[in-house]
Length: 294
Image 1: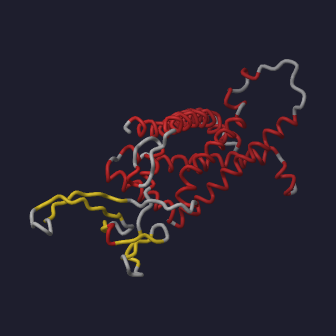
Image 2 (image 1 turned 30 degrees about the vertical axis):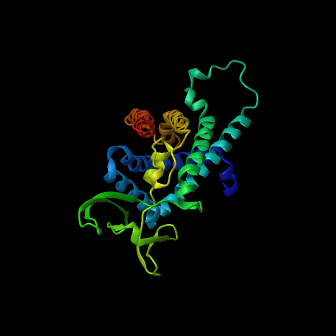
């Protein structure tokens, strides 16, 4: 079979759909593990853990390669799914005189293209709200800052007094005084009045997420989102759509790859149903808890 024939083959499209779909399932697990830090660890510890995780994901060479592979997989999976749906439609331009689809297929399997399109809209919106602001936008992005109240002596009277001290968290793990530094190139920390780089700070993605879902983090530079409830509802509905898509897609991927056997196919289906419920549910819980604790 020629290469062009292979690309036009519905079987080839199903193979690629299955492989990219399973890869994206792995991505979902990794992304979920990182995002759960938003709710499992609180305070400065949780903020630091999430921002360090976000920095690692953006700077580790192996992770960066996987990120580009993920972007390509998302685009290919979406385009391939649309092409496959069109090809199947053309193969049966005239519907059956008697058609009872519910007897042979699930509701999710009959609407995979629509569900996938809705998920693609969510991904584009999600990346515009977070990925674009953190990586592409030229707007100044606030850095991870910690504020402490310490005991000090009044230089005029010598009496003890409480002083608020602001500190930047650096990628070396240290906290450095804000008033002694100036920020250049978004994250580089330079000594004031001296062209000498002292350290690198973390972008405060933790505060961005919390502000987007309703927390007032304006002191870190992120105004509270007035449409936070709408953002939470959109996120939760999108996770429901994703779960519905995975309900059929997970086990269908194995079937399309020819991995069928009476011994383990029922187990794959049960694992797929569990994955389709648990992963989107945990994703949906994150913005709900953030919003409810604002």
